[in-house]
Image (cartoon, rainbow, N blue to C red; front, side):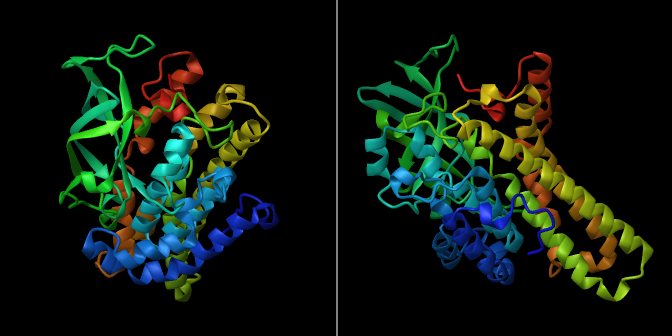
Length: 395
């Protein structure tokens, strides 16, 4: 994997981060070789899941008090980037599945340790409040159907957003919200997965719809991002689960560039090739630097005991904006390279065909949508963000 603009010198990585990153880079060629199998299965084959588990990627969000590696957000993003370089769906599922340790900070510590006896457990699910949770003694009765359960087929826990009801009526929130909601975590075997994942790209992510029907969820298995149960930490923050997402986009863009560079060696003096590749390199360098600069500044402030409110408005807005920019830039880069290779790109055997479909699909995620621009712009101008959580605002 070519890395032009390292986010830091290698010696600044923790030993645990360096080891996990090395393992991720080592399996990237294997993931590339299995691309057809992954796409055909429309999920990650079991042996691929175990390859990912063996890298340590699923445990990288667990804190040192758990015996975990506690990778920084920058280090986590590097690992996801390396895996996505090998296969987009594998990188995507690794990114989603690695959130388990991050969610642990929002659960009662004793309950969380009972839920996660292994640091390598995988969590999947949709966070938006789609389901219905009736308040009952000791917890909730959860019912609903959710979309986009990336990695749910190999998950251990499923987290799902739900609106709260009491005696059939909407339960008001504590801050004047007319309808309160929470995130509910249930064991995977309480969930029915529906075979709906027939899509343009990210086929191997297995992001199927799923249903949960009248399942009791104990209060301790629920969470809100506005309440942290763990000790103060840069990872115990409302938007922490979004931070490493750009790694997928950056890894795919780098993979596409390296592929075209290798395939075009015999045309080294072609003017159009030279200009297109240089422009794509420039765009990737800028996008990657934007992501890591924003992450680094956030981490510096939080590691010194500050809060997200201690960032300047521009620094705080840079976090979601750099994510969006990375996703959209990756799509632009892959599209330009696809056009550059012309008819060589159109065959299913071409990696560019798969990457084009993958980046088109991933850019439909909310983190790459105009709602992010509106939220950042509203924050900068004193308006009301439509998606405040992308800025780490959770009430």
